[in-house]
Length: 498
Image (cartoon, rainbow, N blue to C red):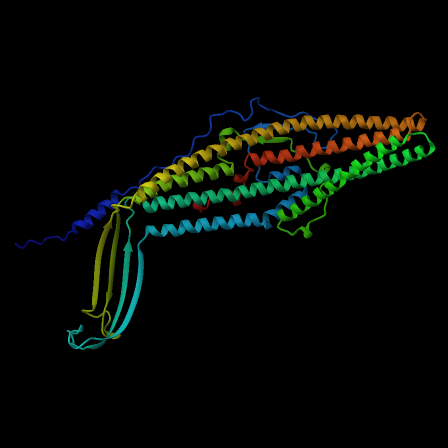
């Protein structure tokens, strides 16, 4: 009986196969931080704001706890010029385009690193003509000392990810991609909020400019009257000087308002991706805006899952965690498998014929023995970087809760401020009406009427400032809660899910 021995793999190949099967990724597995155990944003829960009747922007706002945010929340102001401006900004803003390009860079880096999962294959071809010295044995079997040599060859190299070095590296890059993604989303939410707030401020300043022009006209008339009375000896020079001083003070408030309006208009142009000289001169009238009366307020547990800056900080934590695994794996043995095959012949026509082929298999393992403490300290640095990222995450969460709490309080106080400003404007209007009646009846002077008009115009300025605060802080609340980006298909889709 003839016994036939079955071929079996060499011991080192069997050992490598065992390592590949049992391979694991060293280092900690990242776990998302738990949501803060808090039930509300403010010490005293807020339900709604006060109402100011017969005033634009004076509607009561109700805080709807647990409601979701619309992806296009700015449409709640019902302003088509504002909607068009935001759409133009989302299309042309260079900062947003740069953030989108940065995301493409991060995504391609992930895909590039994933190539380490697979063997690398290369092909080569060499051709040479050689003259051997006659005193030594010639290389070809034909004993020729002058010959051509042609060698096509294919080489394969593979580094088994035994300890997870490649997996942790890809994991870190994927987390960095997520950080860049949420940074891009934060740029988007900041852009939309900035456009709304800037447009509101521009509308407020434009109204203040109109009221200031009225005040200058009123004070100019008062100066003319007092100068006439001074010439007739009815008033002293002190009275004239005091009114001239008042006129100068009012006139001095106009240039800063004009400057602010120009700067706000330039800012809107830049946000929309235009040059300042291309800025639209369309007026944003606050009275044309509608104040959203139902304000969604996300639950505290949901805030950390939707604010882009919090999610970016979490992704940075994840990347730092994966880099710990990379640092640990760098201290462990590294294994490389190689293989090559090809043909060598003295003539092109002889390639790949019998007797010209060659092949080879190889395996190598290297392990760091002494690096002067470099790898050890790199691992310690990676662990310290994770602690740093964790504390930065906590700081970001605290700031996010502060932003929401501050904005909720601001909205409540804005409503109170608007109510007080409206009451002051109503009182000034009553005073003005009475002064006009008394002037017609001969019981009041023109100076008294002009003084009442001045008080009324100043009250209107205070009123429009209070109105602008309500609109601006409403936009700030949507931004503080995350901006509703998760309800926009172009932002909510994770590229890893495609």
